[in-house]
Length: 175
Image 1 (cartoon, helix red, strand yellow):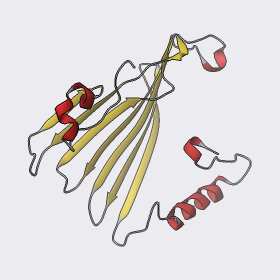
Image 2 (cartoon, one colour; image 1 turned 90 degrees about the vertical axis):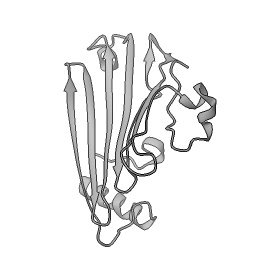
Image 3 (cartoon, rainbow, N blue to C red; image 1 turned 90 degrees about the horizontal axis):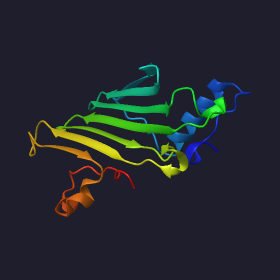
Image 4 (cartoon, rainbow, N blue to C red; image 1 turned 180 degrees about the vertical axis):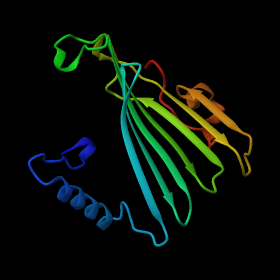
C-alpha cells in the first residue's frame, strides 16, 4: 500500500493503465464525482530554491459552476546540504513543510496554511521538529476585512477562540 493506504504504483506495469484504474476507482466510490458543467485543470512543477530547498507544487483550478483554486506544495531541506539519505552522512536537521492555499468563489476567503510533517527533525530522527502557520483573509461577506495570522496553535494560546469556527487550526510549535 502507498502513503496512508493509497495504491502504490508498480513501475513494471503500464503507468497509464494504473492511473486510469485509480481514477475509475475514485469516481466509482464517489470520492471524485463528475459534475455537469464543471471542468478542472491541474499543473505541477518540481523546483529547487537556493540550491538547498527541494519543492513540488501542484496548482488545481475548477471552473464551470463555481471557481475553486488550490495550491498544494511540499518543500524539503536537509542541513547541511548533501547529507542524509544515500550519502551515508547523517543530517543535522531535516525539515519538510506541507503547504495548502485555497480560494473558493462565494466564500470571500483566501486561506493559506502550512505545517511541518512528521518527517521533520533536528539532530536525530527521534527529536521531532513541529509547527505550523496559517493566514486567512476575508475580502467580502460578513467578515470582510478580517484576517488571522497564526504561528503555532492559536486555539490553545487564546482559549476564547476555541468557539470561533473561522479561526484556522495549525500545529503547535516545538512540541
